[in-house]
Image (cartoon, rainbow, N blue to C red; front, side):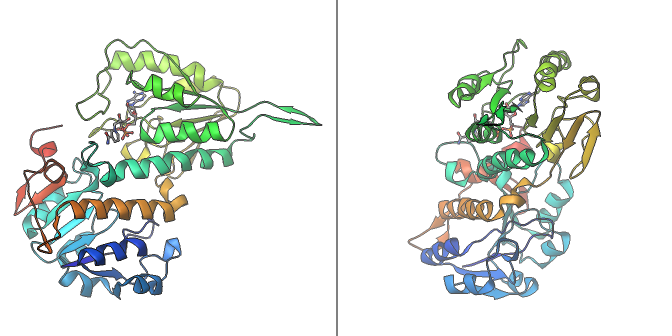
Length: 374
Ligand code: NAD
């Protein structure tokens, strides 16, 4: 059984395989091959992969007879053409916005699994790449933002005077938001946060931050623990409440997402127009459209005295750790459907984790997320 990790496009620094995980796959009985210079952006040389037991090759040669292919992001059309029919392809594959890609997988009889669709259960936690990457991105967002504010984060008492701590406001207290809160707190900032899911209040407080209470009426979560979309009236109420917190903050990090939908616009241009102090906003939801009206991916947008930054791949700043956790998530998923005794795959679609994560198998759509909704 041959497993191959291929390189992502130039704007992605993460790699889907690291030497430590090569060894683990070999111990399971796999032959491991990685594309030449796979780890060049995380300073892992081809020799290090080879020392761990992997062979190195070019993409075309590797894909020809690969049984399982790993990548961080979706494959290019050319890469799908090179895949062996009935092989398994695993990466982040956004099921809601990739109809053409899914059709290509169906045409070519590829079993495609999406790391976006790992169920959020205790058993699947070690495979949950959305969480592992969001957690690191939450940390990276605060570090990134700290470089743009014209202050330090902690309180500092010096002979020349006392500097008051910066105020950081986090909107959305899911995996990324909670890590952003923890990071800002560790750096000594005063932190406030808000989320529409009521259960987050306790989590926010346990990290030493203040929870901003807004009575929005009913705001349910889905069975999977995700937020439901707010009504227009609820969003207006939320915006009114956020306005005050933003205008007194130094750094705002927005992380609000609604599974399978465009991110809600929580901060409008109108809300920012009267702000006179320097505020930096990091819009972490930019990949799904952004939480700030007018924010643009990887651009600095000035809105009066507010600067909005929307880095589209914060994990590039911490790509070594992100690759290590991502590769480990992939290993746990594959180990889950690997039959160690017979050294073969047991691709059982009755299994909840596999069924949910599998987009296509034997030319059929599988995941209930696409066939039945969330
Ligand atoms: P996400 O990325 O989908 O959303 C980020 C946050 O934005 C969420 O906390 C959501 O409530 C919030 N949000 C949505 N609309 C908002 C709005 N208008 N204003 C403010 N906040 C808004 O979520 P996520 O971080 O991937 O995970 C969400 C939850 O899933 C977790 O907090 C947890 O409860 C659950 N989860 C469970 C497991 C597990 O059991 N293994 C693993 C990971 C996550």
